[in-house]
Picture 1 (spheres, rainbow, N blue to C red):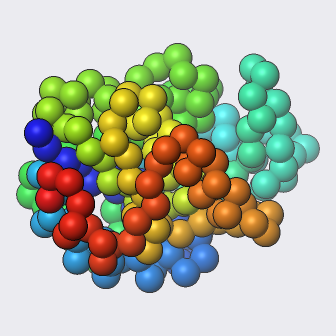
Picture 2 (picture 1 turned 90 degrees about the vertical axis):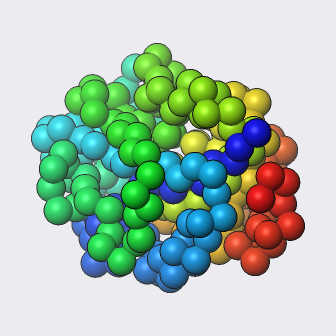
Length: 210
């Protein structure tokens, strides 16, 4: 049996100073660097958008950043252009340590559908392969953290539960966007309702399979 640390979207565009910066995001870097070696498997997810991606406000005439529209029945927030493939913004932040055996999973590469979760696109039509990879590696427990708690971290954790992994959120290694005040609390409540356990990095040493 193995455990996996899933590091969600630790990319330049989401850190402080990035085009879609998450408030206080730089504070999670030392926390993440301090726990990397506790896990059997380390996986980084990355937004990997082509130019003109459907989630960009610039792709919709007359719309502005952070407007919401419906696409194929799903609400889509229109974001600034971010994490364009091979751009500086798409790179993992230089202060984040990357283990040599780390695995990278890209998402959001289909121009016409967004992908918050590290497992599936938002329509649940296409898998990134992450679930099958974890099963192949005999992973039982997933520990998830990164950016942002109320979007990509939340959806990755919810899909982890759907795959029947024991799922933890590392709260002090994650930060939320909080576009609407309280979004982070709502996300935590939703995750706890799906049996996702909220834990701090200091509690990891006492967890199963550590």
